[in-house]
Length: 194
Image (cartoon, rainbow, N blue to C red):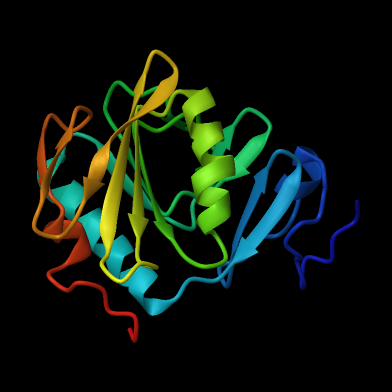
C-alpha cells in the first residue's frame, strides 16, 4: 500500500519495508504492528508521566539505558515506539549502527491514552510477551485514580504482578528493587483536567 508520508493514517496496512521507508516524523508517533500502522499524538498528562518514568529509571538503574519515544524498536517484522523502555547491559535489545534498537528491551512502560489503550493492552501486550520483554508496566491515566499495572514475563507468558496506586510500592525483578508508584504517578489521584 502506498502511504502519503505527510498524512499517515491509523489502520493502514503496509509492509515492514514500506513502513520503514517512511520519512521520520516527530509530530506524531507512528508504529507498525502486525502489518498495520498506528498513529497517535500524546496529551500533557501522558508526557508528564513519561518524564517521571524516565527520571526514575535513570536514577535507580544507571547501569542501563533509558530511552523515551519517539524511538523505534524493531521486533522481527514489527516496529514499535514504546513510551519508555530500559535496556540493561546484558540485554537482548541492542543499539544498531543506524541508531535504532533491535530486539526486546528488558522493561517497557506504556502510558495509556484514549487512542492507544486498546493497542497497548492487546496488540503490544501480545507482541511484548511473544518477544520476551521481561517486564511490562501499563500506566493508566484514564481512570479516576492513576495506577500502574505490572506484568512479569515468566516462561514466555505475562503474569500480572498487580495494580498499584500512588501510595503503593511494587516489585521489579528487572530493576532488582521495589518501586514507589508515586515516583511515576505523582501524588495526585488523577488530574483529568491536565
